[in-house]
Length: 208
Image 1 (cartoon, rainbow, N blue to C red):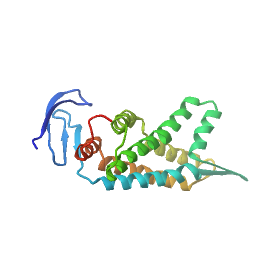
Image 2 (image 1 turned 135 degrees about the vertical axis):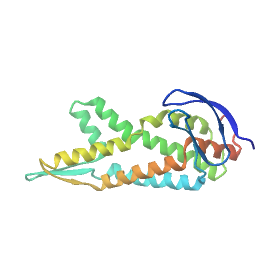
Image 3 (image 1 turned 90 degrees about the vertical axis):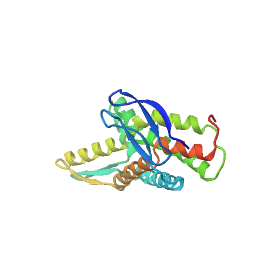
Image 4 (image 1 turned 180 degrees about the vertical axis):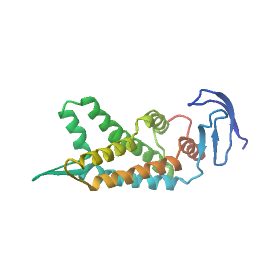
């Protein structure tokens, strides 16, 4: 097959350029600002599916176990990730609580479930109604997945509170850090271009 040529607008500097997308794994960058425009990793579907399963397994304890515990005098309190979002609501910060809930929990969870559905269907050679619509939804949700921002904020809070009380990181914080690393690996292994390439190889219809 010959490389596909198409016009692409750089998301960073708005330069319109014609790029030839090769069939082989490659990374294409903007001619002006060198931002990444297109990438295929060449990874296997089962690698991406394994990373999805690992991330989902890590998300479970990240949500159910204590994120951190704080001891002041004789009182000890611990909170979970959903509990932290709930506490922000109760303390009069509904916007901040909603952002934590959406960006740190709901968006990553929806992304993983949708991608797992597509990859599992590809692996089992089964039809997947709505797969293309889900992938387009993933593209819209991707900017709102901010697990690394939440983790950085939690670490900053941990350092600041350490001067006021005894603060201990919980199991959930370690699991969420590992969850973030797995998400980064998944983004590298299964960029959108690679997932669409797998769909084309499977012969799925253009719309489903």
